[in-house]
Length: 445
Image 1 (cartoon, helix red, strand yellow):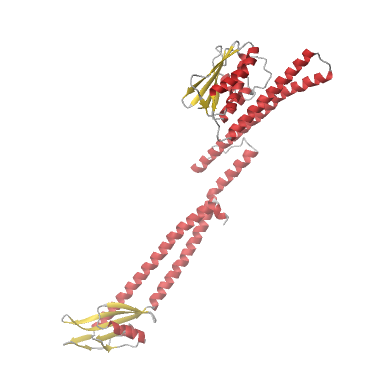
Image 2 (spheres, rainbow, N blue to C red):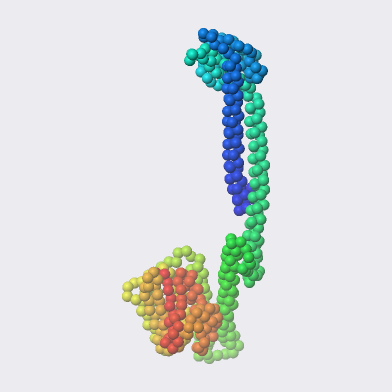
């Protein structure tokens, strides 16, 4: 039964059931037609025998006489001649057959059968001047007929069984051979996805269906390989990004333990430790928010005005330390986004951190509704983003070509895009070198 749970078994079973229905219909139809043909032939012989016997009977003024004995064939067929209900000729036969023949005397032309022994009888009316004067009854045994139909039934059933066995064997082997390339391709794809991500089926000549399957597998392996490369690269850059603030913390703590420092130096060391810990916390919290957004089917909702107000309160101070002013324009009417407030903050924070490093004097955050999306633009008056940098900036470890004193690995924008996509949105950069940088966040309304 386990074999019939496979596609090969199910297709074979379906083909076998279909052929069984067809063969059964053919067997039944053949036997019914054969029985009908044999019955018709038997009835024709009975009519012929009765008609031959009737030629030996003469009618004179309502009386019947048998001119001569019926020929041998008529005698073999068992023929009765009746004048009314009186038998003029009665061949030897079992009592049950004699009673059946007597019951047909005087009646209309008709057939009847006796079950034991199996005999079929036919009555032919004898007339004179349009008036019935007697009856001829002919009988034949059904033994030969029954043997023929029995042999035909057994033979056709045996033939049907052989046909079904042959069909099962042929279908099992044929479907197995047809599915063997699919099985091999599936095993190869599974093995390559674990060990050899660069292996592909390629454009080798194949039947159309297998060619389409090969292209599908190749596309799937490409996506798996790209996803793994992205995750590996992100993991490596994340390790580097976390290693940098962690190294600062360890270094400052070692310096504090090795030599005595004055109050100003200690305060500076504590500030470095605090900033490094905060940087690590932001990275980890962003990744955790992305993981939650990717795993949750319900993304929640939040008031964008309240979120931007919280962002302004959080980033006004850090931007002011670099002499940069933050202007936030949440839009006129209240706007709801289909994303949790925490996720919106985590998406915008790396963009503001990036603007803080590049802006000369001003950073603007503006939100507005755009169809079924909410569009948030983060603009600064810094050197801007070139067309070549617009997409590469979102790759883990990639940074702009302008020096800004940033010692990280360039994960902020990558994490922002990853989190936005996990929430059903997108983050992109608009190129415009010399006119300041503009980063656009699109979130579902």
